[in-house]
Length: 213
Image 1 (cartoon, one colour):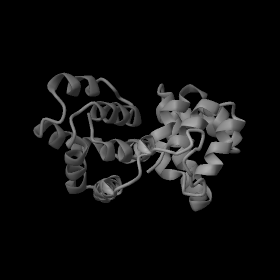
Image 2 (cartoon, helix red, strand yellow):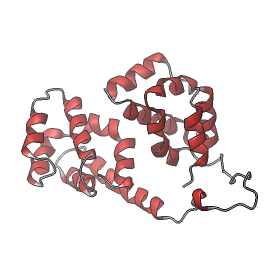
Image 3 (cartoon, rainbow, N blue to C red):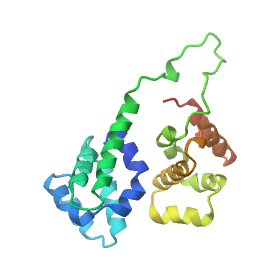
Image 4 (cartoon, rainbow, N blue to C red):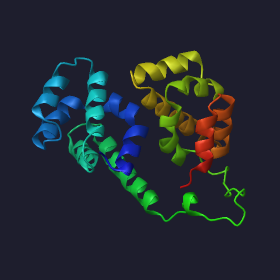
């Protein structure tokens, strides 16, 4: 499986990569570096729609060993295409994500309290972005309810479903990262927690409160 940093960057950039990836310019190098095998290559060749084919490729990458997405991004950054900068940007994001994950943090599961009823302090004003990758799978098929609570329209929801077909987890992640891009630092852990509860997603909200960076 991909590393946590690779998985995070792939998930948060899934839609943009699917739209922009210069498949024809890159597939030769992908095959040459044995990122996919002949069977997987043949499967991709049967898909005529460019975005669907790119999504299928990304879905295959997700199941590969750690380091595969980094190699893919290196190849992407070296391709002779106007989109090559996106490959370089993805490499930078992976490095940034690795640095964040390497920072020492507090594991709330290993804190001992004098009073067993006392709960650990939770900073609900911190940005929601780092928590998206930890919580989106717990929302799953119910993500449209959360999207409506976050003031997305039914047309917006349809757009996410079209852009990220047949995978409710990816649709949820795409919606949340889109919201974060639009609202920046105002999209806090507190706001996400409240929106989850208003959407009758109490279990996901409870899990969010227990998470720490």
